[in-house]
Image 1 (cartoon, rainbow, N blue to C red):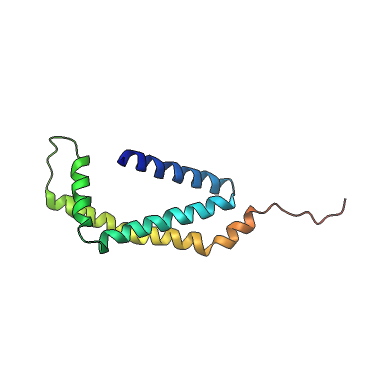
Image 2 (cartoon, helix red, strand yellow):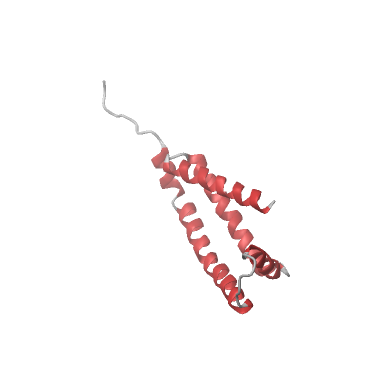
Length: 116
């Protein structure tokens, strides 16, 4: 199930990215929704009790068998990733929202004012 959800997120990211590169207005909305969902998900790690422990268990499951690593180092990396992901996600979401009108204007086909 985890692989399916990761694959789905990858496909949504790819569709949004290609759509933005092709100047599709709906792709911009998809990107905003995707980053808003990511921000809500990231914030939930800080406010939902026990979520960090579940994330720690998931990271240990993803390690190859027999891998040696300090638990405190892994915990530090998880915290670092979550704390750095928060401003990064907020920045991207802010850029998408604040520059939305400019993107939508660029998506419109140019109008010709010269008479034929």
